[in-house]
Image (cartoon, rainbow over all chains, first blue to last red):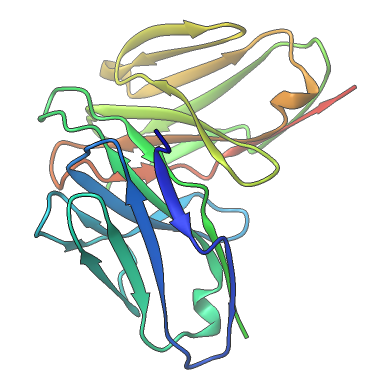
Length: 116
Length: 110
């Protein structure tokens, strides 16, 4: 049981290049999330997927797109990378509790992205 | 939106000391989690504690939901406790999105 996995671990891009960050979970969770963490700050939500087939914007969605490929996989795409997108990106998934139930989120190891 | 404030922002202690980290939040929540981010950047789940008290070894946490705060206690600190501790809260609306505080950076000196 690997939990939440992310690839790649590190990436360096030039301004204007595109790339896709991959995330997969093997815990049969319905909900998945993408966060970014800038230096000295807490995490901020980019996009989330409450269930397979749905995606919604979070707090900082500009410059990103997402795809919920299936129940296990949730990818984040940067179409035209900018230096402001230099950050550490975390994927998370949540236990499938209903409102008022058990709702713990579990995080992957992160992808450290630098845009030059 | 909901605001999450953590205090203190930085804490430097000697090995063996005890510490209390605080998390205040501005609205009702049905999810509260404490994380430890280690020096390698990994986020480690410490507690899922929307209310009540839990203990895990030298760590314990208490959330008083009606007064909108949570406390994380670390006893007999070890150097491996160093890192950043984050509190994050979630609300029922919007698929349980977590809102993070700014973190408390804890440094334990030998």
